[in-house]
Length: 426
Image (cartoon, rainbow, N blue to C red; front, side):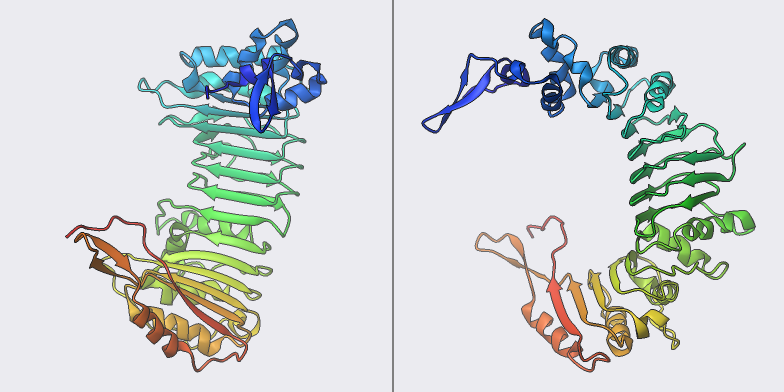
């Protein structure tokens, strides 16, 4: 059956006879209300949406009334043509119709400055849109002035350099994704963010000195992945990670990546972690050989923690310290109910000590899940190598941890998983 484009579907109707879908000549979509037509167009790719303007005079400007618009600069001859199209779109489109706008600035061998897009994006943001996203895939950051916006619900910025501002109020914002964003530091070293309805924040590899979130929901889910150079002799630099974490001292759901935990590991002797007073769910990834040092410090900062998901990864050429402190974090004896520990099983001593640390001391523990990469390679009938779980070793480990347990209610499980890696044919 021949492929049917979006324009073909809009110029015809799809009917079914005896279970076979066919195209009839009657244009039923044009009989629908204009608002519903725009809703249908919003499911098409941008280029397909624009192509509908050639169907008839009634469709000529309908593409400009689509509520959600997505633009990729790579679909145009050059940046100038893309900017010209955006300006034309803004001139035709009614402010009340546009709900969301996403722009992807593609790679360019000439490494042109992406600032060409700044004026038209400024016009977009000034409108009362609910969704705004910019992804710049070039080595040069996209400059952007981000004003306060009452209607904005979703904000996505990647490789953007924000122009100077002292405070930013986004009263309706619920989801914010910031990656490789450069924040103003010269004239506004302590910028303030007001997001009272924020539900989900992803903060990755951004360049900043200091900022403060003055309001957000305590039920917000926060994902932190930060990594930058810190000079020990500079007190302000050493306080960066502490000030960042302190913004989220009241959240209930937090994810910390290995980069963030590595910074905490390096600085814990200089600055203690802030207390996460209401945190009940924590996901962390840390290096196996430093886990016995940093894990108790993290737990001590979470007095009401109930659910912990811990992933251990390998870091070569480092010495392992397998000792665990005798002083127990308060969550371990008062609130922790579920632990999920995933490891590549490269150091049995550390992993077993961590398991025993929870099993011997967590008085409220109801469930402990240990995910281990337990496998061996053996040839198949063609002489090629394949992975096979070592069931006997899993059984031995299960028996090893069956007792004793501090909590009689605790259920213990061991689950295998396979690393995603090619299998050698030797």
